[in-house]
Length: 178
Image 1: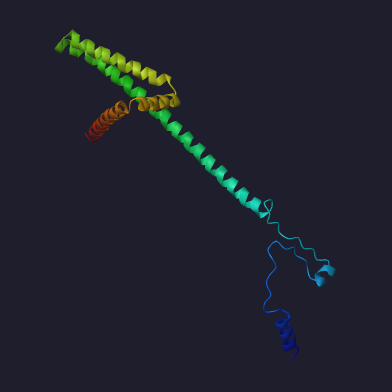
Image 2: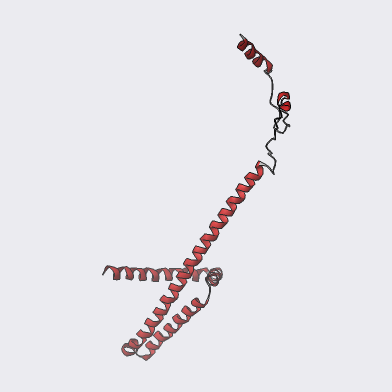
């Protein structure tokens, strides 16, 4: 019977049209809690409270992304340096092959054509040296400037380089299979 009275009291103590206080209303503990020595410190939801946790998370994410970009840039720079070294080695070898072939061209076609081969070898060697002396950033700047000034030449060079690379890779695969 006492349980029924308590239940009735609880049910009737809350009006049916009661609305909760606004979110920014200050919390005041009930009288029995004030006297019991219970302290209540509400969570701070202002910009310096849980909002700062969100700001901290955003900053952490930005830092993580920046670190990832930096690592990717370092890897790309390393690959570019390796590629530059391989390209200069290949150009130096091509220059040497042209120089060696110039003697055979002299014998078979004449000294005039052998001189063409030597001139080509010298130009390839000069190009190789120029690439070797520049940094990757300088080479990228030069490439951007070339594309800006004459996009037709850039497309032609890209097609030519692609053709040469395809031939070199094809011959390397053929030699490996043989």
